[in-house]
Image (cartoon, rainbow, N blue to C red; front, side, top):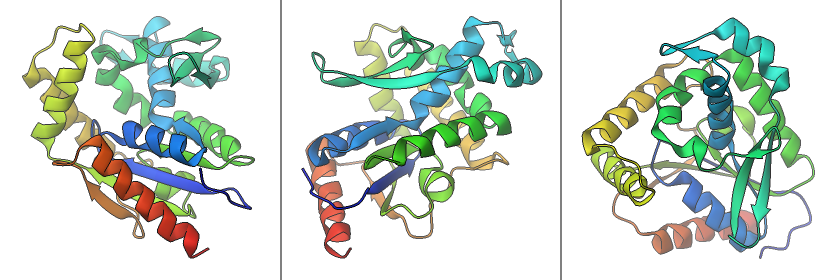
Length: 234
């Protein structure tokens, strides 16, 4: 645990399926900070769209989504028995549902809609007003918290990311091919990096973490060292 006299913000951005959430969760646990999974927020909106026919025949009804944004309430709670954070959409736990491939297929398209991003960014900034946080996503260090105390940009080889995600989905019982997973990751990268609103890019002052050949313990050790260096200089 890190003792601090002010709120500290750690922003972790990077490509899809590169383990941002894993590092962010571990870091928040070690530091006794609040963890915020911004990606889960966009996944929750996407899940809402799928459940309410806002996405139909592989098309998003932008006007309907914008009209219903005020109906979407997203929260995070920590399940002490499972020692993990759960995503809550309008009072319903949807942690497993938002990780399925159907949501993954549309989340980048939903998240590039201006009104969706504005709502999510406002929610993210609210959380940080009274808490020290670790937040991961695509635009945390560039848009949401441009003055974050520490910015980390995570990446890994595309094929390695696909293999990791493929194994994760198989372990959860999903039937999918490695080729489908790699295609989904490649498409999401392209959409995230080319969208007009808050594209995925490395902040000028972010530190790059390429975890292609690092395990969880090595990543966490690297991140904790960077946090110690930053806090020691403040």
